[in-house]
Image (cartoon, rainbow, N blue to C red; front, side):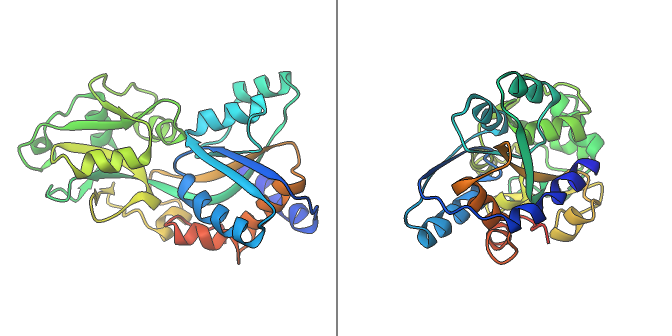
Length: 270
C-alpha cells in the first residue's frame, strides 16, 4: 500500500504542470492495459490531431524493457516494476516513475457449457500444478482439463504466480498464450479448457468463475475482497514532460482517461 500512496502523491503535481509540445508518442507493454490504452489513444489523437501515438502490446516485461532501453515513452504494465529492473534501469541512467491508472481482477474462466460456477485458490493451484486433471474432481463434468496460462513476460502471469501458485511452477503441459485475447479464444473454443484473464476481457464467449466464494466485480476489486486483484500501471522515464506528460494527465483525469478505463471494463481510480 505504501507504494500506491507514493504513486497517488504525484498526481497533484502532474495535474498542475502543463507542457504543450506536438510530436510522436510511443506506448508499449501489457496486453491487459491495452484495451484501456486503445480507447484513450483514439480519443486523445482525435482531440490532438498534431500528436501521433504508436501503441503496441507484447507484455509487461517487454514494456518495462522498452522503457529501460529507450524504445518507448510509456510502458504499460499490469505489475509493479521489479527491484532488478530498477537496478538495470539506473545503471543505464533511466529512472522509471510509476502511475497507477486503473484497477483489475484476474478472473479464472471456462467454456460456457461447463457447469462449475466457482473454484477455490487451492483448487486453482492444484489444477495449474497438474495435480487436478479432470473437472469432475471439483464437481464439474467428466472432462480432462486443458490448462491455458500466460507466458512468463506477462504481468498477469506474474500476479497469478504470486497470488495463486505461491511461487510453485505451472505444469509444463499447460498451453502458454501470449495475450489475454489468446486465452479468451482458446477457452471459448474448447470445453476442456480453463484459463485466466483481466476483468476487462470478460465476454459471453467465456464463463467467469467465483474464487473462494467471491465474484470479481468493480466493488470487490476496489475493496480487495476478490483474491486476485491488482493495480495497473503506466511507467515513464523520470518525471514526464511534453506529450508524455499531457497523455499521463489525460489518463489520470476523472472526466477523460478514467472514463476510458470504465468503458473498457476495468475499474477506475476514483
